Image: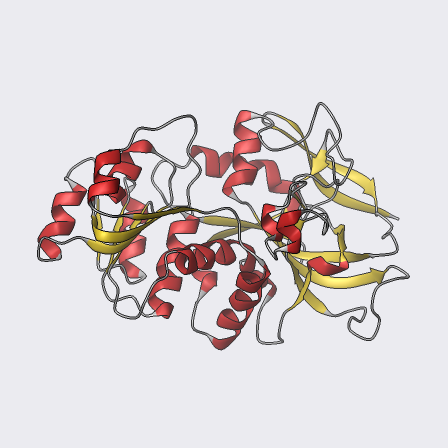
Length: 357
């Protein structure tokens, strides 16, 4: 049986191919994909060539290397189950989304419940031959998360990026009434805005260069969105917080200038969360870190708790994740979708989903 898939071969090289539908191993499940979102990680692999993909040697956990079907933000239905899958828990035709993280289950971090810190960490659609940009995809049983009937496939494909946002909010220890700065207005920052509103933040300030994204974030409930190229963000934040600064800053861009804005906008003993991935080394005022008694933490993916919480919050109607989906395209236009995102300078696009519905 054949399936249609968008397969990554290298820098700016995604091809629509007919592949054999994969057969699930004993502990695996075959998913018929319905929706899959394009992540910023996918975009980096397309625009710049292999960044996290294994092309020169096999991945230590999955054994995969070379071309693959990307896509790790997806939802669908169970099409087939391996012989060791718990049939009392899962049924063919059941609606699911996929928690894409792969882990060994044996290292110190896995035993601590920090599977996203696994020493052999991998992910469906990145270090695995099949992902959500194909009609079918095999996953481990532990990757499955049920989605309720009132959650659409569109929303189900937003669970993964929302999980990243919720993990950042949780790492920041946001309390009801806290004031917050989010740097950036892309998908992760936008979902952090929606999640922080649901979590009880009072004033949520944001920074964004692109005018389309600034306008959208204001429409979605940001208290104020600054253009960091036009104003001193830290100064503006202090004007609005009686000179103190915000309780939490979540940096979602990875850009040094944005990191400095976030760092300088915190109150004493504030919490700084680094969500965006910086490229190369950056310089921050270490004296302020000590003198102002900042709390600082990094952010890598999420854990299972955040994924389950994302599904529940979407099902409850508290977080309208579908707002971030600005365009839906068929698999035949996957390369075009990547080109649209990589060329978007006005900020009109947030999240493009590939649909098999």
